Image (cartoon, rainbow, N blue to C red; front, side, top):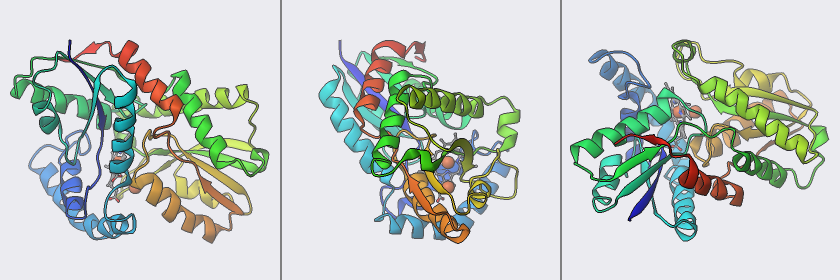
Amino acid sequence: MKKAVVLMNMGGPNNLDEVEVFLKNMFNDKYIIGAPQPIRAMIGLLITTLRKKEAKENYAELGGMSPIVGHTKRLVRRLNKTLDADVFYKMRYTPPFAKDVLEDLRDYDEIYAIPMYPHYSSTTTKSSIEELQKWAKKLKIKAKIKTLDSYYDNEDYNKAIVERIKERMSDVNTEDYELIFSAHGLTQRIIDKGDPYQDHVLKNVECAKKELKKQGIKFKNIQVAYQSRLGPVEWIKPYMDVTLNEMAGKKVLVYPISFTVDNSETEFELVVEYKEIADEVGIADYRVAKAPNHDEYFMKTVKHLYENECNIEVS
Ligand SMILES: C=CC1=C(C)c2cc3[nH]c(cc4nc(cc5[nH]c(cc1n2)c(C)c5CCC(=O)O)C(CCC(=O)O)=C4C)c(C)c3C=C
Ligand SMILES: [Fe+2]
Ligand SMILES: [Fe+2]
């Protein structure tokens, strides 16, 4: 029996020429921009045109590509050494796409598609699974494809979060710090239509708080805020910049709760852009923890998800 694990993520440019491809594909996704065609294409073109120059400059500062690429490849390499399946990854908006990876999986019997999103959202998990399903059908892939919705409450995943917090705070007393769990934002409209993402994020924070307590780690205060707001519409609140503005004179640790793998939203938006706000506001110390990446507890989580939790058959 030939088994493959496919990690599914959003993607990010592999080089500066791919920045436009990334943005175009993202804003052409019906789960990101809900408007029907051709309005969606027009909105997509407008946002891509407005966004691409700054986005390119940001990715240039990150070395000409998204950090998501290297972190994902490293995770795949390490998982390949520990799982009894061959491990691959596919991205939603940049290569390798679902169709590219599925071509390599023609002689496999089972494919375990594991979202790199711990929280379910139509904009991420659903969009990725549907894409995989569509191409599996088109390419007549014989393998059974299995997946799962979310794992924000997995104990090892929450241990990985706490490991990353401990790692960033090893030289200071956590009790002097405010902890902000920063989640990627979503438009309020998507939440109002029933998307469980925010509910899952808040439940994840409760699980992480329990794990911190279990390990005797205390912070001055713990709260949640949402980053990555874009355009003039309402996004879920509180906004990260507003929260930081209330932190003058305080010491702050930010943990990127939406992500299992570091990417431009963590390594650029949180580390560079929000640091500028922190400095302007007069935050006494501003730190950002790493995402789980290849932490041993996260590797254990993926192993567990593959072995026990892929109960949804999609083909
Ligand atoms: C309408 C816009 C967006 C929605 C909705 C959205 C949801 C969403 N995104 C992630 C994870 C990631 N997003 C990333 C980048 C990114 N996201 C948006 C917009 C929306 N995201 C933009 C415009 C960008 C590009 C940033 C830029 O500078 O232009 C990334 C990083 C990719 C990388 O290159 O490293 C991730 C990861 C989640 C989890 C989510 C909803 C739950
Ligand atoms: Fe995003
Ligand atoms: Fe952002």
